[in-house]
Image 1 (tube, each protein chain N blue to C red):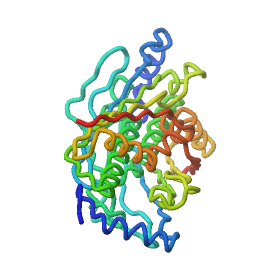
Image 2 (image 1 turned 90 degrees about the vertical axis):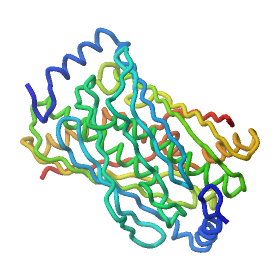
Image 3 (image 1 turned 180 degrees about the vertical axis):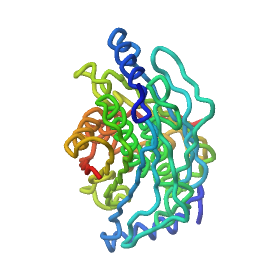
Image 4 (image 1 turned 60 degrees about the vertical axis):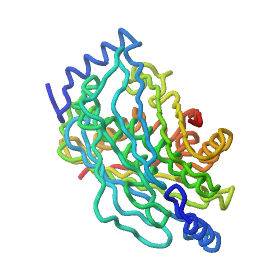
Length: 182
Length: 182
């Protein structure tokens, strides 16, 4: 049975497989970045480990990031923080489609907008009281489908409760950074 | 004077301007997402507010996200969590180039790799003790330029201390999510 483009049989089989072999749930995702010029740099995303094996995609996914001219960049791509907003919307939306499928709710349209407020006095080093990152983020969903308004609200609540990106952004994660001169 | 492709005169002028008018530092970044099918969806990034005005880029930046087949997706783009790794590498690298320029250190090569470990028993709802998001993230830089090894280490340390994405990922940020059925 497929609903919302989600093969629920495979989804449930995946959950059952992981239940029996928890080590299948260990994944490692990766990205590699190369500086180009000024604040412009490019990330390549491809291989990852999971379900006990290495995976390689058919081609690398490449993404440019930069600062806009008002922040002394050359606008060759979005700012790094905008990719956080993308990741959040994408994660909540993927989860929502899966959860709706599992509940038999057919969706016809899901859109969301994400806004993040930031005070650049933090990263510019002008005020130690101002944090470097976003001060808050808001996500607003509009959902069309055959569920009731309450069911739609509940889909979003459940997706949020199971979202990897929402967890990382709201709770934080330990990050270690090393560097070597070459 | 331009070093590393960074116009340091403009950079310092920007910092001075914000010092005099702190309201110029208030920025809002945005993204909008549309569900396509299954776990596949697409984000559009363009306009933002900052330095007291609205900005629109010449064209939208569009990014697909999806799950891989092993997670019942169709691999139409990286997973949402991989974009977090991209954002982190990009932010640290942009900052590093700016800081090196401000210190008069010319860079010739900056690469980084980012790895994030995640146990999918969290998002699959199989173990309430397992978090949804990454359990840890590692970033490894390799830097070539005319600074000493100690100076290169210090550039990375300073970039980390001033990184918007590093702050958000390590400390978390309040996120509100609303939904309406349409």
